[in-house]
Amino acid sequence: MVQQLATSTISMLTYPAMSHDGITVDGLVREFGSRPPIRAVDGIQLQVQPGEIYGFLGPNGAGKSTTVHVLTTLLPPTAGRATVAGFDVSTQGPDVRRRIGAALQEAALDNFLTGREHFELQGGLHGLSKPDRAARARELLERVGLTDAADRKVGGYSGGMKRRLDLALALVHRPSILFLDEPTTGLDPQSRSALWGEVARLAKDDGVTVFLTTQYLEEADVLADRVGIIDHGHIVAEGTPQALKEQIGRSSVEAIPANPDDRGAIEAVLSRFGEPAAASPKGVAVRLAGGSESLGQVVRALDGEGLAVAHLQLHAPSLDDVFLAKTGRSLEGDEEDAREEAAA
Amino acid sequence: MQLETLREIGIIARRSVRRTLRQPALIVPTIVFPLLLLAINASGLDVTKNIPNFPADSYLDFALVVTFMQGGLFAATTAGTELATDIETGFLNRLQLTPLRAPAILVGQLAGSMTVAFLASLVYLAVGLLAGAHVAAGFGGALVLIGLAMLVALAFGGIGSIIGARTGSAEAVQGMFPLLFVFFFLSSMNLPRNLIEVHWFRTVASWNPISYLVEGLRSLVITGWDGTALWRCLVTAVAISILSFMGASAALRTRMART
Image 1: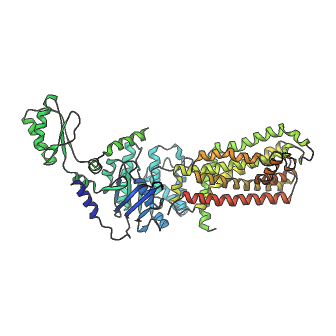
Image 2: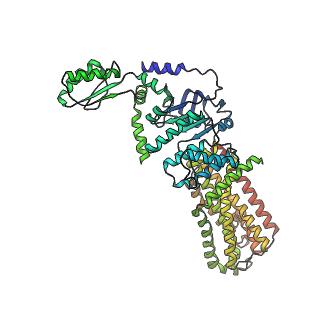
Image 3: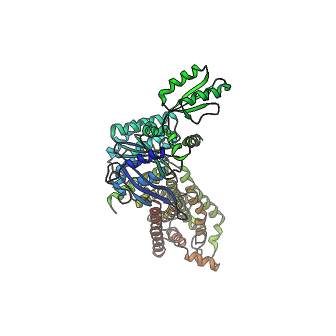
């Protein structure tokens, strides 16, 4: 059923015209190598409305960065078609580049230049006049909180400062569409939160369309108006975070008995409220047929039977549940790996 | 060349010069290593001047221009390494996302290595003169010497850029350095061609373009204004510059797969 719902969500989208001020992707394919070719992006189809934050969620190697490289004109597609800001990425690369900003996965900055010198370089190459470059640098440095560090060499910046500078540089020529490729990977929670705030502000106040790739569920959930979940080059689900989670179904409740001998009795009580669900080794869980509203009845039923629980938790469906339902795998393992890699 | 391209070259060149001047590790070896070799050779091989028909009064005069050539070689390594580093770090992608044209990247990037070559040339000349060398072509000759040395650095820089753009690896560029150095030893760098008695060596040296670069520069120091040597040097340097720049442009175009 979940599969059908997701398929219907995708098929509900129509792709009638390729001239579009946001992003339109139709049957996009990108292969690498030739013996045999590896298909990193396999016929994806999506549409991002102007002013929308679109979260592109998937594990490492799913095809997220390749898609961004194609949409930012850094890689030609093998097949299919994509337009960005109304221009074809294959044939109108310079027009696309004029209208987009991008902060790619690696915050590619020059450690020997200062933050301000980066603006001078980037603004100059985008054709901004010297006074405009200086004014824009002041404005953006202030916006991302780097005014005090503006004349320090970037080599001495922290990871968070580099990411913020990277984001600010992507905005120097006032793009209408912004591509952010895993912008918060490796950042501490405080820096991540600050960057989320800035991205949300850009979309809300400045009307910038944001295409954001991430492997962090929370990031997609918090930031994105709509999410596309990609795995092995395919989009396996697409919709608003809420709609995707609703597709998965109801909340589940997990109880850990205070006395392990009560496990069977607790299981019997919970089974009245829904079918069994995955639980921790010491716990018992059911997917609530009546949704989260039936949690009160569960508590009363347990109490009525005189069963004590050490821990009772309501699990709302998450995007990881969506990913699990679509692929049979959990994204959270990859997310943990990414965090550990970043920490290392 | 379009005005816009010139403007882009200026922007990239400014960055390249800033980067280079902020990395003493790039400048110091370029200056110190050739001077160290000059000191060793000038003192150890000075008796070479006693060989009949040796063209200079001192081996210092004869060997002085080798420092300029080695400086050019360091410039090649710098140019290639800087380009490869930009590819490795993804900075090239940042540049590609702007309207910047590929040739502007190449020419602009060479500005840093040319700056090193210029500074190094001034030091080589100053140290040589202080150590007792004479520039037979006088002050004007010294200026031409520096100009030709810059042209040689440009030519070698183009070769470094080819390797940098093709491999995208700073380590690979540095790994090529000893190989290029072999070409130096297979030239008339240490002895005039007419005094090389080993036949195969003299043949190789005569076919080696490095010999003509060395001989052109050297003529200004030991002979004066030698039109033939200067003309050969100029043509060789310009030809290598053009060919290496074409090769580097092609390699960079392949690297920059943007639509």
